[in-house]
Each structure stands twice: as structure tokens, then as C-alpha cells.
Image (tube, rainbow, N blue to C red; front, top):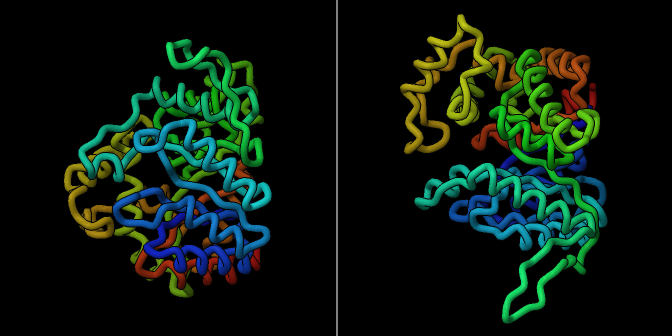
Length: 330
């Protein structure tokens, strides 16, 4: 199993310190949020991280083509890939909090797929076609800088986006959590998209994502993770309730009805409304042995890597505890 971290950084030094620490603890990669009003620019931050590390990989979870043109995304990642000597990972989404908070709208899925194909073609030296005009002859334009190719992952949860991932991407940041049945459901949707484009499911890495807290007191770990994982669950069920078992629908709907997206991320819902089903699906939380057991089950189910987000208030504590008590004893 490969363990990847996800988080945000308020300063470049915080990003660098986390990357160096994560590398020393055995994490494979660290993915930074792209939220321009609350976090440092991820590309400048990752470039600094790359200069002070040797093995850990870097990606965004996630950037978007609402604010960043597809050609700029391709250039930025090719440049980062050169700086890091091949350690960059493209992480894309249609646009969420950083987009909605400034009154903008997420990219329509049809336009998102077009943008992904442009990024992929530029990073695989196929170029993009531009129309003829008075100012230019038109034709195929190539990306001429940076280190290429760079793997492309997208954040996907709903069936349509999963199919897009199957057609266009190297990997998926699977926001549906760690539930075995849901992961199988997602694989089928990805396979449908892959078939459309003459690809195989085996060509696409599926990386489930969720929240973590590890503590010697397992009950305390589960209490601590409840408030932070609520945002992850809410984001998922905005797109589809298709994956919720019939007996859990009422509890999930009550959770959704009382969620207040306008509040700070860890204050958006009463923790008592986080049902055991939600806790189990979207988190790996408990004592070290409990966390290791859940990771081993994921591995048995064919998962090769997972993306893990500690709560902001105890990020460093959980990152280090997970590294020492889970990764190094796995």
C-alpha cells in the first residue's frame, strides 16, 4: 500500500516542513489544495518543496480550469516535473469551494473533459489544434518546455465524472470513501468510460480518499475525526445518493439537511449527526492496530494507494503518528 497525504498550507514554510516530514515518515506523495484566498499558491509551494526533498511526489488536490487555463495547467505541471525530476502529479477537479466562494461556477462536465484531453495531449507531446485566424496560421501547437509526460488524476465521485476519468485519466482521487461496495461500484463506472476510449480498467489507478485520525485511544480518534469528515461526506452526496444503502438513507439525508456550508469547515454540522455508516465509510480512525487492519482490507480489495487528510487542528500530530504507527509497522 502507498500512503499519500492531502492538506493545505498557509505559508510556504509550512508546505516545505510538511513535505520534508512526510518524506521522512514514508509517505509516497503529498497533495496540496488550490484555494487562492486561503492557501499559498500550490505550484510555487510545491516547487520549493521539490528543491528540499528527494523522493516524495507532489500534486494538487485539486486545481481547476475555471481559474487556470488548460494550457497553463499543462505548462505548470511540466515545469514542476522538471524541477522535481519527475515527481509531479496533475490533480484536477471541476471546481468546488474556491470557485463557489467567489461567485463562480464549476466547469461543465463536457468542457472539463475537453480541458483534460488538452492537458493530456500537451503533456504527451501530441499538442493541441488551434483554429486559423488573421493573427495565426492555425494547426497543431506543442508544449515545448518542462519534463513530460506527467500523470493526470481527477477528483471523481458521481457516475458521469467516473466515466470521464475512465476515458481520459491515469488515475482517480475517489471521493466516495473507503467502502468496498462503493469502490466496486466506482470501478464499474470507470470501466465503462475506459471501454468508450479503447482503454482497460487496469490502466487507471483508483485512489480512495478520506479522513484519518490515529490515537492510542481509538474512541478518542473516532470522536476527533467526526467534524472534519463531515465536509467530505457532504461533498460526495451533493452529487449522488445512489451509493447509500437503503437502511442508511434517512440518517444521511438528516445529516445533509443540517449541514451549513457557510460555516468554518470543522463547524458545519453537529457531530452527533455523523452516523456510524458515514464514519466507517469516509474515515480510517482508531487505534494503530485498527487502522492497520482497515488498510489491509483495502489492499485485499485491490487498492494500491490511498489519499489521507488529517484534521487541520491536529494535522502534524496525526501525520507523524500515522507514519510511525501505521506506515512503519505496516
